[in-house]
Image (cartoon, rainbow, N blue to C red; front, side):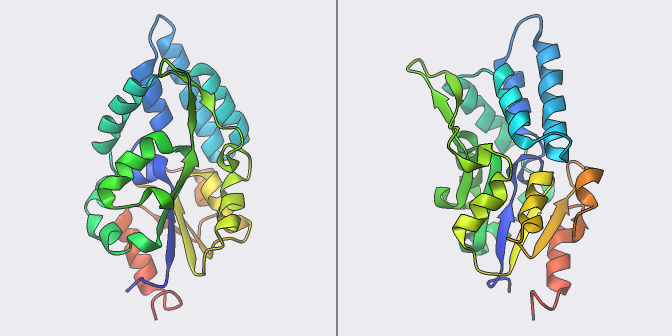
Length: 227
C-alpha cells in the first residue's frame, strides 16, 4: 500500500519515548553534582531540538558534560528497548512490511540505535547517526567530528547525499527533522507529538501526529501518496 513512499524516522522522542543521551547521563554520571549535570543536559537537549540554539552547540555542550563506558551503553540499550513509543510498538508490522523503505536518521548515536531498531528489522545500513569515539579502556572520549550529523544542517546534508526517490516523508519531533523538508529534501514533515510537543517545531509541520495511527491515517487519506 505504501511501497512507493520513503519514510525517514527520527529516533529520540519519536521512535523512543525518551532522549537517549539524557538517559545515558542518568546511567553514567555520579557524584554530588549529578542532578545539576542532568538538568543542564536536559536543557541543552530541549534548546537544540526546539531550534533555540544550534544543534552543533547543543551536542558539543552535552558531550562536554557526559561520560560513559561500553557497559553503560549496554545498559542504555536495555532500557531503550523498554521505552519504545507505545503506538510504534503496536504497529511493528508496519516496520516489518516496509523496512526497505524506512530510514532512521538521528542526531543520536548508532552505538545504541542499531541494536534497538534491529528488533524492528531495520538494517544498520538504513541507520544514519553519530558515532562515539572510545579509548582502550572502553570509555567514551568524544564523537566523530567528521560525521555530517554532528553539524548544523546535518540531516538535510545527509539526505541530499542519499538521493532518495520522492515521495519522502520525515517523521520527527525536532527542528532538525523539519530542516530536511525546509531544505527541499522531503515532501512532507510530520511533527510527531506522542512523547513531546515542541510548539517551535509543530508550527512548521504539514501534519501533527499525536501517535502512529494518526500518521497512518494521514498518509492513507492523501491521494497524492496513496492513489
